[in-house]
Amino acid sequence: MNASSFANNTQLCYSINSPPFRPIPNASAYFSSIFSALGLTSNFIAFVVLLKSFQRTHSRSRTFFMIFLGGLVVTDFMGLLVTGSIVVSYHITHFNWRNLDPNCHLCNFMGMSMVFYGLCPLMLGAAMAIERFIGINHPFAHSTSMPKCRTVFMVLMVWLIAGCIALLPLIGIGSYHMQIPGSWCFFNISSKGNDFAFSLIFSLLGLMSITVSFLLNTVSIVTLIKVCCRQGKNQRRRDDEIEMMVQLILIMVIASNCWCPLLVFIAQTVLSGRPLQIKYLLLWLRFATFNQILDPWVYILFRRAILKRVAPRLDWSRNSIVSLSSFGDTVRRFTRSSLRSTMNQETAGDRRKSNLPPPSP
Image (spheres, rainbow, N blue to C red):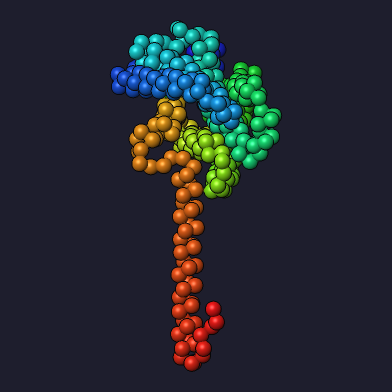
């Protein structure tokens, strides 16, 4: 009787893993605190660097790109602030979720935050790849039909789409549950019912964003190399394009390495119907959270001003690419001239052997 009444009073978020949980060592509290502090500090420094660069820039394409970078920095900062504060508070106080959150409001909020701040960086990376693809392959259309307000609107649309997806479990498509070791909430990764649909939506949308970024960035790099190998007067503009593409490629590589293991693990788990292996979920989740720490250092370190200070002897501009092309042309010209001289010498030797008169000048 008591057991049945207890089961009836159990909220959905506590139906799989029910608190109270066994306290975890202090090492987890230290790790979470250091991790959150490092990520917040990195993103704050990156935001200050972007703000100063935004005030100094005069290029329209670079302005659009910095708006996307600003949206990405704000997203990573808020994601660490919201989720990190809950996790660190649990590790320090070991509060009982049932007493603090009997109606699952806090657990649902944290699950929504995990989904929202997880999808936003991937979708923003795809939006940045689309913007750079248009800017490099169709520069005239990009410069005439892409005002700043439209770029801000694209960032807001990404946030809106990610927010709508995070709200799906609240209307019955999927469900948020307490996760082991009791410090966080996430959607239920299962191959049954609506949990199966939401798990696939999350994993496939993330993988699709990474795929779009990879394909469009590859085309943009090939186009940019072809353009940069031509002599022209717009060296400063092409230097900005190269710098933006280097930063975008690094963002894509970091996102792929951090998020692909978790996204593939979720898809494999629900498609195969196997039980969830919590140790792999925690491992790949930590990989994914490193994305929020590594992203800001791309904007902080990989700028021409910093690279010139680190290695002043190297040429970080378009001339380095053009010089490679010029060096190749020089080698080809030298090879052709050497071949012509060799052929002339052989022809002269054959004529001497056959006692033919030398050719008239």
